[in-house]
Length: 200
Image (cartoon, rainbow, N blue to C red; front, side, top):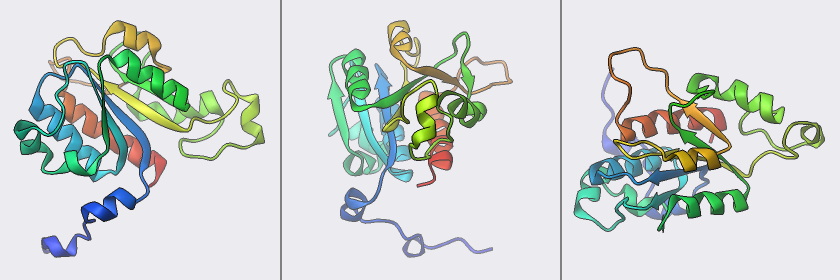
C-alpha cells in the first residue's frame, strides 16, 4: 500500500464545496466552551459536507484564531449561524421541519447503533428515504426535511430544557471507567453515523 498524495485525494475547492450537495444534517453546539472543540467540530462537518453548524450561547464564533487552529479552514467552508440561545435554534429547526436529536445520556435514549431501526419505527422508512403515501400512516405525517444533532457543554452536557424540546435523544454506548467522550470526538462519531445512513 502507498499513501496518497494530496493531489490524489480529490479535495473540493472552497467554491466547489459551497456548490456541492450537502448532508441534510445541522450540528448544534449548546454552550460549548472550548474554542478548540468548536474548531474540531467544524473540521468534521467539512469532511462530511454537513449542511450547517448552529453556534449557541457561549459558543465562540469565527473568525477566531483558536477555532482556526483545529478547524483548518472548515469554519470558512461550512455554513454557520449564531443564536443567543439554543432554544431559538431548536425553534428555528422545528419550523424548518427538521427532526431534532439531543446527544445525551437520558432515560429511554436510543443507542447510536440503533438509529436506523428507531427511525424506521417512527417514520416507517429508513433514514434518507423519500416520503411516500405509506408514510402517512406512521406516527409522523411525513419524513423530516432534515436532521439536527445537539451537542452540549463539556461539563454540563445538553441542558435539560433542550432535551425536553428535542424529538429524541441518541447515546453512544461506552464500556470503560469514564462516563463521557470529548464533545468533538462525539460529534465526529455521530456525524459519521448519519453520513453512512444518509448516503450522500
